[in-house]
Structure formats: structure tokens, C-alpha cells
Amino acid sequence: MSVEEPPHDAREDRHAQANALLGAVGVDRRTLDSQASARASRAWWDADAADYHRTHGEFLGVDTAEGEFVWCPEGLHEEDVELLGPVVGKRILEVGCGSAPCSRWLAAHGASPVGIDISMRMLAFGAGGVPLVQANAEALPFADASFDAACSAFGAIPFVADSAGVMREVARVLRPGGRWVFAVNHPIRWIFPDDPGPAGLTATIPYFDRTPYVEVDADGVPTYVEHHRTIGDRVREIVGAGFRLLDIIEPEWPEGFDREWGQWSPLRGELFPGTAIFVCQLP
Image (cartoon, rainbow, N blue to C red; front, side):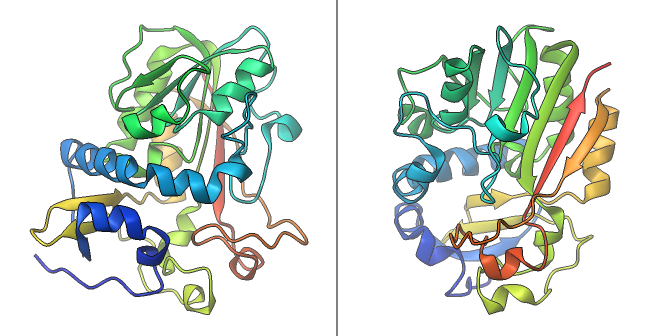
């Protein structure tokens, strides 16, 4: 196994507490199966939950009773874009809900949401608002055709080994005509270092290299994993699960918006997209 030291200006500063708790010391590129990916993601999000909410909580509306539905760091709000369509009276599944501010917003606007997440610590930050379930997105613990719509705002999809399986699971639990909308890192971001500054403007990784990014401890045990799929991969996963792809939205960086969020920044946002939102529907 080849383990590289992570660049100083990458994730280590932004996630120092989680890295310290998990003993992360380096970066590897290797294939992980579903079990290993789930184990790493559960450990990571449990360890990073407090820092995540301290850093992003206000932007996401996690401390408000009615929550907020923000699709991406570019600040696209469901209230403005209505990608899910009418939500009143709809039973909606949120996949990778974290502390569930999106689900709370849906409930406040007349829907009946249920949120799932692999991390109990993330769920604990949202306890008491809407029904929440600890579960892996690759094996949804719900009956066939039990939801009217499903959504995921940067939850689960980039962190699972079998994202095509997640698409099939979501299709299984949706009723005919059900809409599935999910936001992920734009695949083009894979080729750039995870840095919001000038160092993040130089392509260093082949777009077609799908080997996962893995952070490891001193024994080589994965502490964090992120999987890459190209735009074409995503389209094939969606269509293969039986969905019709209605739209791919690439939010532009808002004028005058100076917030940095991880690798997102005004510098990078002016040059290339950071987010891809896929709008899908069952026939």
C-alpha cells in the first residue's frame, strides 16, 4: 500500500478534530467495497459532526425549528427553485440527511418527511424534529413504493461504493411518478486539489480515474472515503435504475457571495462548477 502525506492546505486544517480522533495520518488511493466504505463514513461523520455543525450550521439552518433546504454551497434554496415540485401532503425520503434541516423545512411546508443517515452523531443533532432512521443508503429499510419523492443534498451518494445500487433502492421505495433529486460534488471537481485557493486551480487527477480518495490511520485503516463518478456514470446509474433524467443543474457562483466552504470559493466558482444537481423521475 502506498500512503501519501496529505497537503497541508487540504482537509487536515478544516477537520483537525475528526482527524485527531480517528488518527488520520495520510492519503491513499484504493478501491473500497461497500462494507469498508460504510465503516469509514460512519466513523468519519460521527467524529466530524460537532465541527461540521459549528462551521456550517448557521448557513444550513440546523438550529432553527423549521430548518432550511439548501441544495449546495452556492446557496440554491428549494423554496426558490422547487426542484421537488409541490411537497404538500407528500411523503418524502431524505437520503443522507445529517441533522435533517432539509427534512424539517419539508415538514414545515406541509410534507411528511423521513430522514436517514449512516451517522448516529449527525442524527443526534437533529433529534426531535422529524422521523429519523440510522441506515445505509445502499439498503433502505422501507417497503416498496412507500414514498412520493426522495432527495439528497450532498448526502450519502459520494460516500458509497455502490451508488448505482442506491439509485435502484430509491427507485424501489418510490411510487410511480416519484421524483428523485440529488446534489453532489460536480464530477469536474475531481481533477483539482481540494483547495479553495490558487492551488485548487491546477488539474492533477485524471477525470476518468475512478479510484476512491481514501484517508487512513497509521495502520492503513480507512478513516474517510469519497468515490468519484463521471457525468456519464451518473446518467447511466439513473437510467439503469428506471428513472427519466429531467435535468442536470450546475449552479453558478452567486454574484457578491464571498463565503468559502471547504473547496468552494469565489475564486474557483467563477471558473468552473462546484455542484451538479440531478433531477429524475420514475415513469
